Image (cartoon, rainbow, N blue to C red; front, side, top):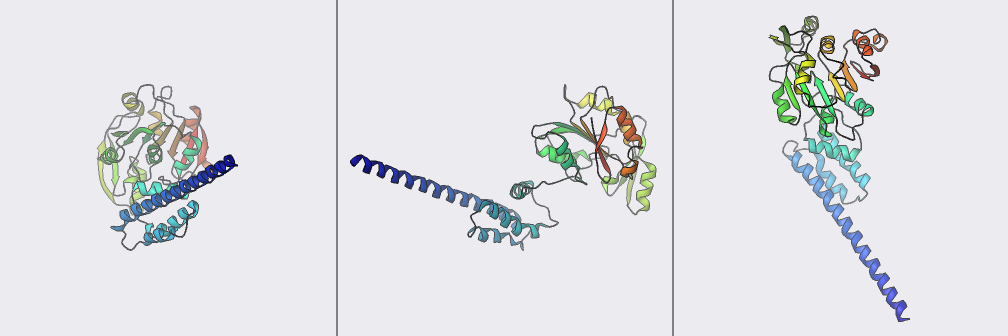
Length: 304
């Protein structure tokens, strides 16, 4: 009898301890969520004084389900964040809460690239015509996932921002072509339009894009650049090429026996799907063992 009473007492004590642990755990979760919200509100309060983010805190007091908390959190924040700049940490929190995928590319190329590559482990990219470390970037999402690579752009001063925002990459200000002779580089106020292609530059001017200056720049072959800067024994998982009409010059300047990426994402302007097979780039890459894997409005992604 005494033994049964002892067992009952131990059982009741155990239940009480477990209950206390669950209570403590719940309190910790509530506290962490409050810190989560407070951090966001503190960050946004200076630049978004009228933001209704404080509603997330009041919502939490009546909502203890984690998924619903995430929904309330996004519902409170999203309207006030439209067309605003917020930190990458905040974006990460929103990404985690929503379970969605952010794209930094112009046409969602980075989402497709993630579908084609194993991004669960670090890889290596080469980005020719990189333009900007974040804006319209097909490789920034990979960089934030631990990947590293080489960024190349001909625009004078372009690598200063890369060195600041992507310091772990190899950032090179350089034009790429199969010729080393100086060629005119058309620099627009909209840097994404900068090009060596005279005819394309004239089209942009006729469409009303202001031309800032024309500067002669001496390019280098891609094979030479990779020979100098690609880390020893490093394979290339993806090569991104966005050079406003100079794609063939870049492709021809590579040594395809030495440097053969698994995937190539390349911008092919004014090339509908029905004319893709006849494009010189497609014909050239097929000879190197590549076939089209995905087609967006301007960008085509090839794999082998």
